[in-house]
Length: 295
Image (cartoon, rainbow, N blue to C red; front, side, top):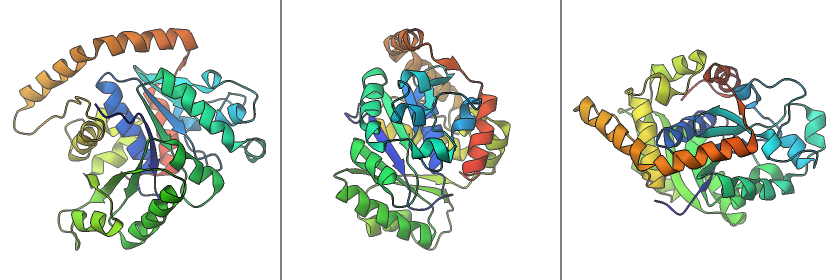
């Protein structure tokens, strides 16, 4: 298994599928039995609050970074083995935060979860650059469009300046008839190509259904690509359905579940200890719809 446990999921341009990638990558890892925490590290333009159907007075990462709450207070359970730490949406709350506190919050989560995924805001700001250096590795998300690739180059440079490491590139909304090969795009950025997520109408449908794509249509091309990405990125045994032999895919899923039984037990203990709150998958839709409805 990869030694890297904290990943910053970043993009230079909004609307390329960064939040969708974070959600589906995290869900795929959790389905394989890993304990996963998704953190909305976009402090200025938070979009995961709807993920857990928060009330106006609910505790968020903003409260944690303002010194008014612990990270446990801002942790909400989405489903088995996966939690979310949303940021607030109030500008007044944002003004009270100290981004430097994110380091301590991430270290706390690192000690309690197998993987921590930081959904980083796009653009250039202190709170955007900070997570790039805190993470063990940065996963770049971009579409094949020239503008998106150009902005991704800036994120590579920011990661280097922050002392971070780039894991590689994930291209979303890909088509087989593109003008430039996916490998060539990664080569232009001088980073490895981690995976490609093909254009898939089910991605938008899953958003409005309020269910991560890897659960909504697990055998679809984009869902399979996200599961393969999870496996390739972490080295974890993530079940990946195949068109050739569905029965084998089911058997692999059973094997993956049994192989991480100890992790499941530990996850239950962590849930009891921190008293993480339940949130239905139906609450997912509003957050991702606001952020980005494309894969």
